[in-house]
Image (cartoon, rainbow, N blue to C red; front, side, top):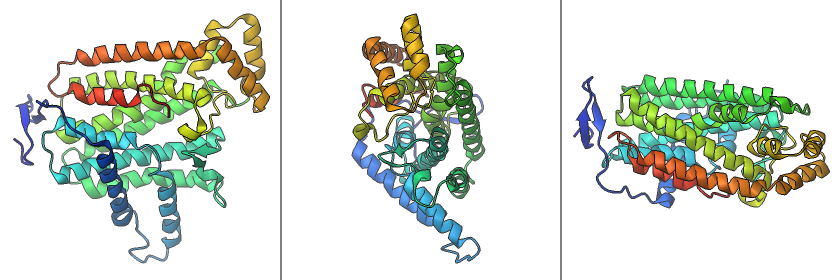
Length: 374
């Protein structure tokens, strides 16, 4: 048992205490967890990010009032799966965590949500998106426009202000700081791959391939959406050995790929009323899963149609591309891929033998995303 009253399974070669495998199924109430998670956002906004208003600093008060609005509009209105996953992962890693530890896990979860908001505000500008989470994109708000670029910078900076306030005294402070910096760089690299592969309004299918798609997904999405939340929980729980982090990364990056293929499918065939956004991958010339599958299956005549109509803003062209996807039976191809990938993923999870990596933690992740519709 460690100093916080947590049950510990073993001590590693460096003398660090390692968290125990759970001996019984962890019970998590999603609604209660989300409610408790949301309460922490209010605390962070009041205690940590209210600088300039609490202090009465007239020099920055105007900017800070604006930035609070930026956070309130862009951070707390998503599904919050990434943020809550830090907390649920920690509960799988540590038996009977204290209230203070759960609070800190929720703070880290919100830091992931701030990182997500930073990426999305910037991404929406680059992609000329119209809606996000069922509302107009931030840059589309009255009197915002390109001010949103600086607002995105603030959203990222807020992460490190929060981390300093709540984690500076922790042994793992440097580890989580480095993890956030590394993950941000990985995601920026992935966004760069995405943008450089498919220049706006320049259709060059010679740049498209499943290998390029896989690289974009890994770097742009999988690291921050799947590996980051679990790795943060592992650092909090005292996991130290590289092998455990490497094995977790292997599974979680594969899960991230599965998630992104779903996202690409929903961008085209999902219901905007359910997904909360109007898909623009076709118009934006995205190197997505559907177009890469279409290029593998299509005839020369169908390829000419794709070259003519892909990346066009005209709704009629978008309709032609979607009809061609249907003609190529990509809906069935996607369903087959989803089932095959899920079974492969579950087999990999079942083969886990590390005491630091509870199988149930990964299974809970997989169950959240399998057959999702938003």
